[in-house]
Image 1 (cartoon, rainbow, N blue to C red):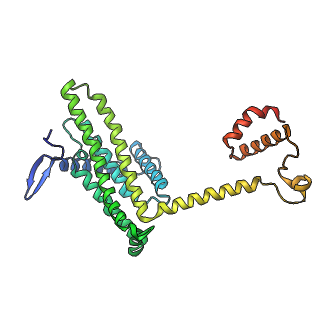
Image 2: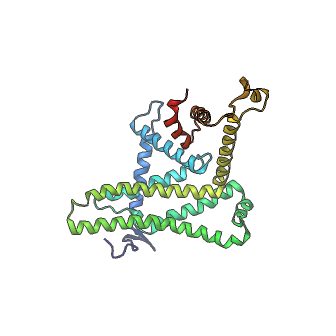
Image 3: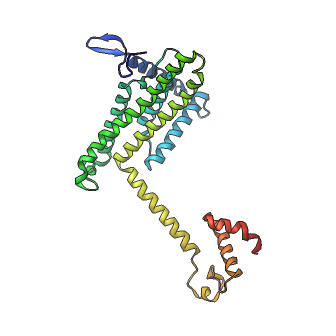
Length: 302
């Protein structure tokens, strides 16, 4: 254990460049991921084996998550975000091996990953919107916010690195303190909890990277507008479908009149409301208040 969590032990010196322990562990994680991916994809078949099926589940799950975040096609972003997720998860869970410290518990690794996300956001944004269109986004909603927008690009990258480093470093410190005070077997449940922590941190890091890239290419704003438009159109369609027709049959109570408003109060109004609630239930648009009305008054209305 080093004197400070901010100082990484140097394994050897390659000229003027020091090779630290997190770098060596990162090389090991990269080699393990490359080997597993090669074994999973070397003999692809329509009826996949266990390893290929597991790889397909991981890829499809990441693709579905990115589609929900980006509100668009996730395939251009999938290689980067998927690689970040697999690396961060494997690096976080490397602590279960005896004598191995996760490289994400050293500050240099989260900073390097955050810088990859930082430059990737701008690269995707310029590729999708052009140089002028991407730079124009920093002037929205008003040019007076240009300094804050530029500062936000830096602070969110810093928070991305500090969040991952702080969580993994604190977990390592807790494991070390418990091992010194209680013995070697007591931290085993905490190591099992570390698997969950590593998965959660990898998910948060990759989702935030996807959110930043989606904001850079502009799909998140368009997705929100499209979703609001779809909800409004769906609501208008429901209202239009349940609105009584204004034809002759509506005034006369004919077959094409739809729902005729109740002419009398009391139990007739309750019966009319219950019938409307039944129609809403059949169309999948039942409100909570009408659901309670169906629960109590439905047996009384034929």
